[in-house]
Image (cartoon, rainbow, N blue to C red; front, side, top):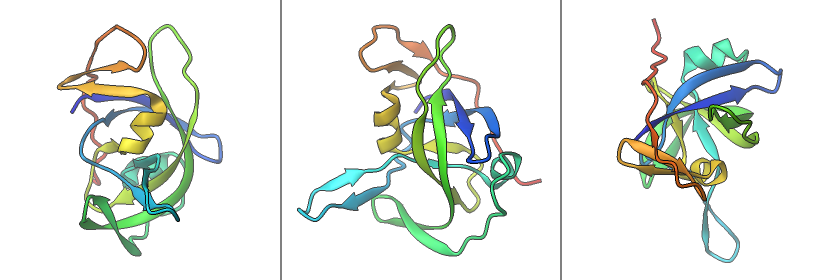
Length: 146
């Protein structure tokens, strides 16, 4: 589960570059009317990072399935935009739903968001779908309350 660099933009336009964990088992799925499940682009933003982005104070008023059937206290933070930080080039912004998992200090990318970002993790390395360059993971970054 590699750490990758991403840039997050809030609705107010505030941006922060940080490391995020890809392939952590974090998923957010919904069942469509036909019965198929779809993975949604969701990002976990720890409370200190949410405050830095100017997102409303975090209130853990719900409990959500985040990895199969594991239910954890979460706060909905609304929509944000996320993009990969790849040296030497611009990558597109991807719209994602932001949540905050109580006690989680890492930025986590859901399976669905990784698909939209075109990230393919391989152990501690990763690549962008359609490219041959296997990239080293970024330095871990934690956003602990303190």
